[in-house]
Amino acid sequence: MAMFDETSTIYDVAKTKLFADIKLERAKTTLYQFVGVGLLAAMLGAGIGLACFGYSYVVDGRAEAQKLADAMVEALEKAHLTTTGEVKMADGSIVSLAPGGQVTLVPNSTVHLDPSSIVRVTETPVTDTRSASSGPIIQSSPAPETKVVTQYTIFRTVAFGRGSVVTGWRFDNSNQVNPTDQYCYYDEPANDKTHLRIDLGENGIIVDSLQPRVGVDMTAAFGNCNWFRGV
Image (tube, rainbow, N blue to C red):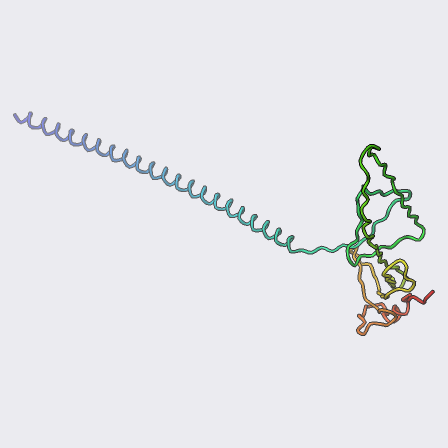
């Protein structure tokens, strides 16, 4: 009887220890699962955060680029560009106009004709293609001719200092003998292919407030103005 009791006690102890070991292993397994799930969630959170940061950076860069483009467009719309120059024709070149074509000049523009150039105006005859059996020709009263007035300016240039003294004789029409008015200015080229202009006088009279120029005597420059002396 005593041996049975002792065997039963050993069995109970072993059973209890076995159950305890099983619970411990289950607890470890559960802990490992929670740790794995936690690491996975942390990695997912970090990936989502990096993706959001990258997306915000890209979107912000596009917005800055759009702002820069809009600013450049606005600046170009408000900019005013002014250019000066001259147009020359090659020797022997011919310019023709289509029937009904017109040539106009911008107001306040000037045309300088080279004295050695030759201008030839030709007219193409128009053939009457109407049949001789057609009805009588009714001639309308001729329209009044529009008088064309050509204004031009003759320039006289004298080298002076680092530039030149330019005198302009402005004529209102080609039949005018003496110029309507005259002006004179000092012209000096700059390094950026622009020109510095300082007005010296008008109609033989020096300007009241003559703008100074370092290294250039503006009073002496005025003395080099080539005023019209008459014919």
